[in-house]
Amino acid sequence: MRVLIVEDNPELVALLKKGLAQGGLPADSVGTAADARHVLATMQYSAVVLDIGLPDDDGIALLRDLRRRGESIPVLVLTARDGVSDRVTGLRAGADDYLAKPFAMEELIARLQALLRRPGNLLGRRLSFGNVALDTEGRQTFVAGAAHAFPARETAVLEILLRRSGNVAPKRLFEDHLFGLSGDIGSNAVEVYVHRLRKLLADAGATVKVHTVRGVGYLLTEEKAG
Ligand code: CA
Image (cartoon, rainbow, N blue to C red; front, side, top):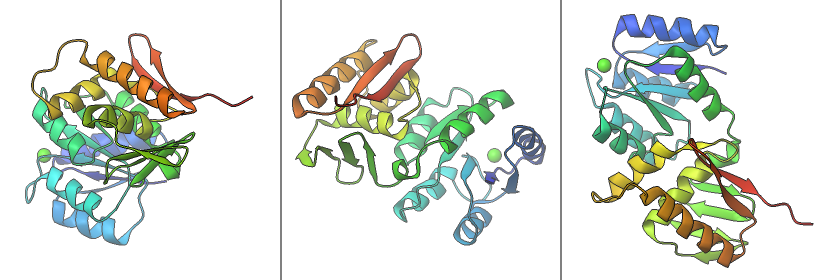
């Protein structure tokens, strides 16, 4: 299990390598998007820590290329402080999580470990949990094999939950994603879309439920039959 750090600041790279190694995650590093493309095409990594501001290209462009090629490796994006638009762009480009600089090393390690614990079948274009599946490209939801066209925001909420299934998805992930889809989001918007998604799933006969973890976020759980 090795992590690739894509970051051009040598001091930060040294800190990251040391911190990740102490957290049981050995890492290699590259400082340019071109090197990252080369290394990712030739070597197997378990996850990528990706800086957005690279000297030769935008980290987001690199991420978009990876996803376009069907590469499902978990990617955690490092953004500038308060870079809300960076976070939204990152998530829409296929980032699995993000962290704003400056960050605590413990948090980075915890987030990476959460990404690495995800089952392999959750990483691809088709995400599934229980009898629910989502085609992330066609934006179609399947419940017990039957196709459903859920509305865009409910589908976005479902995608975040599926990408995190087994782990709690923090509420801010949903907020950022919904802000990315529409500018006028009320303070209870996440609750509204989660509520609608719950109804859609229940009406379709899903075996999974959206569980609220008060003060933290949401978690997909499976109701076992019998
Ligand atoms: Ca940078």
